[in-house]
Length: 569
Ligand code: ATP
Ligand code: MG
Image (cartoon, rainbow, N blue to C red; front, side, top):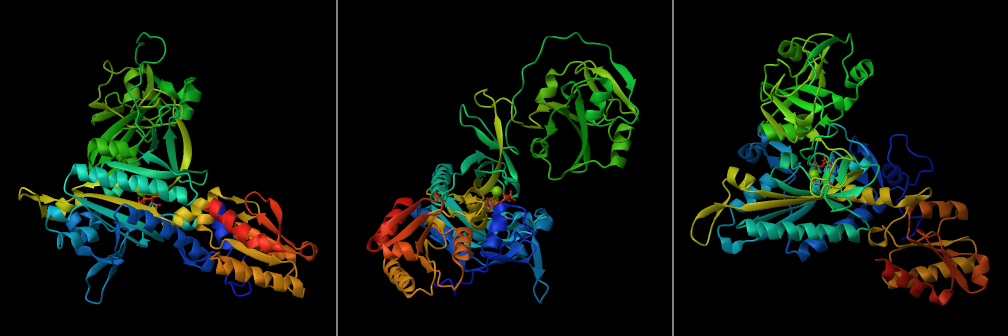
């Protein structure tokens, strides 16, 4: 490819709309352009990187017996009604109607469609296991589309679905996909750590997310260096904390006036207490019924855990009016003593002694509230959000925390969809059984963005060879010098013949401009052809990552490049 022809409009300035480095660089290097919020056009360089990631994914999916299919993006509402997700998916789903008023959606994911496909075709255990995948656009009307490809409303996903005859088969499919994912991210030059996760709207209960640790990540991961436990904060388990500190005598329950003091921080400052001496009382509405959740003052409630524990569909924080009706007090003064709704407490509340709680009365708190004596709870459970410094639930070590980018996720679905949609096969013994399913997704664009997030410097992108849009750029310092132009053209042809993906910068630009573009776009190798070195019969090979420059005799340049590329891919 000639640089003069390449459609890669680079930008000198950082676009104001882009917060993350990866987003800025993808715009600046001319990889893509925004068309609407969360939707992008890929330009040639961006598309080449995307296609390379897709190819790596394809190879690894095929290697575990995956077969590629392509399903429609537009999906009929009926199948989503069968699974119950037409209502459940909510506003994230793009919905549309055809001219006859039939309802459709733009697929946010394809569990329903693949289940409907397979149920009408696969009849016998002899046809299992079956692993089908596709690479295709997905549509989710995200509340906050942002960060470029990280959170788009239209994005490319690889989604695989496995169908097995029993749990043992599912286990094999799951771990095959898990290990394929490890290889895929490694081949893309990414360190992605599998962490235990919550299954969200997809369903099932065994699931791992693959996380790239980065400040730009929207997820938070807790991990233990001692035993290797790692989990998304949504999922990270708490342990029943042993009683901390010396035994205390129970003090008498005392009401104190706390005028306009309602947050934990205000209460602590006012009463000279620590947050851990307080118990927070949160009023929720679970499927229409009020409940109260108690967590220690220095802890946060994890709503996902509460929803799971209660087994409810909809869980919402109660509004001020409801809180006033239930507690008799404005927001900020709820407490467990005398409260007449079911109370659920986090494990850490069990060991609280002489706690500060709201008095269910405006401008008042209670000192020395004690479990058993002053209030009782319906159940204790793991309800809080785990924080760095908390004990590891596996080995008792200390958990650390880091932000992460979720690039992929694997799920054991079991029979959630096959059962609901009547997708069955005949077992060996003739019994009709629902398929045991798994599903496995990778965000292709998000993977490219994560690679850039982890591989760049102040000058631009530093592509790993495996997914670089092109491997090499040849930069003659001046195309006006016939010797340079001729040497450049010769090397260009030589590299093309060797199958190296190469761009010749044939533009009549100052060398500084060409070097800047080369660094910004991030070609792993730059060959500079200057008058002085050429006189000596040499060219310079520069490594984008290390910035090392080697002078190499002209006739050896192509083979030297091939060696570097082989070593790095
Ligand atoms: P998130 O929690 O980030 O919203 P998710 O868990 O809903 O993602 P999955 O349904 O697991 O996403 O989809 C599989 C993969 O698709 C994710 O691991 C991620 O890499 C990618 N992905 C999901 N949503 C988006 C999005 N809005 N933009 C880009 N990639 C996405
Ligand atoms: Mg996910």
